[in-house]
Length: 376
Ligand code: CA
Image (cartoon, rainbow, N blue to C red; front, side, top):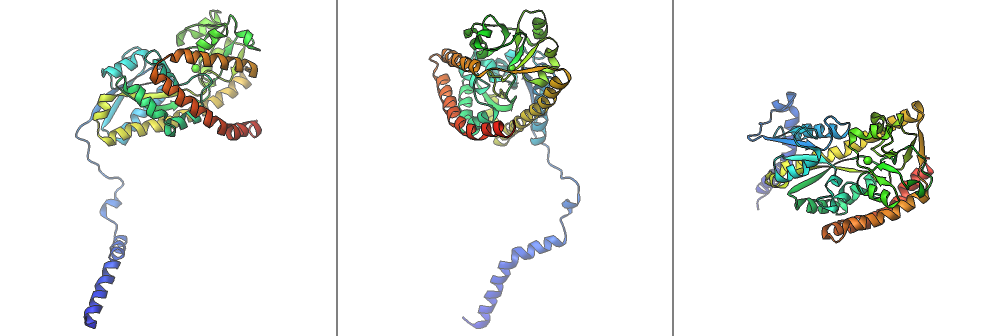
């Protein structure tokens, strides 16, 4: 090859190598016209989905009702207006506890609640909300996200034509308001308490009576002595219910609800026909809800606990270790009875318990040690 031909080839090669740099430099000189504008115009979607969401909470319920509204807003923004969700409080469209069936049948597109409301449909549902002496929010999220829990939740709900999403967590709840001291397990004998779900079954094994009282009637029932005690959520919600005006002792911890997981659920047929990016948006917005709800609970409960203790002079009491150990024993019996020989519930229980055992050992040497030794 002649020298001048070789030089030409080398020049061309160098030019090609430099091309990206040259192009980039020319871009730096003059920004595209679109960068000078404050916003980009994005084509509006051809098809807009108009959905209804029915919740199991009263309209405008603090935190839980608020997050349903936020979810609708986030989905609208993320989908560029392609999914519009109108939120209804419990009872506005259907009674609160009909949300599951209505979404399952497709008469309403989606719902918001807590899986333990559906324990009558399948006992497995309890594990996706809260079981006594179960995992706290951090541990439950780990089970769901990376420990196989979410796959089992989807499998459980698929039987009912539903797709679930995690939609927030209350964090550890309080043990409840009592008008008598609880110094040992014996003090539960004859105690009439509003305590739903498995917690209520445990109370009955301890000799108490679990009384079913609607949220709106708890205050008067406690005031008139129809019940001796009640649990609700935590300082923020409890303060608004006014329990501190009529009960003597506020007990901790909420052994029956160590961090209740909340949920959104969507009709599965409808969900599965959506394009993948919209499915992803529905799940992504729920993840945002998961973070917001626990954060809001932690903030508000911190503020209202101080109010209760410092302004209203509420006496915080702790259940003794012996009392809690006895309740734990009854819980194992109650869960075994609940599951019976239902295969999917047993599968969920085994996954849940083995994960709780594994992560419990880790939490003990880290989280628990930290709280005990540093944040006393
Ligand atoms: Ca509760």
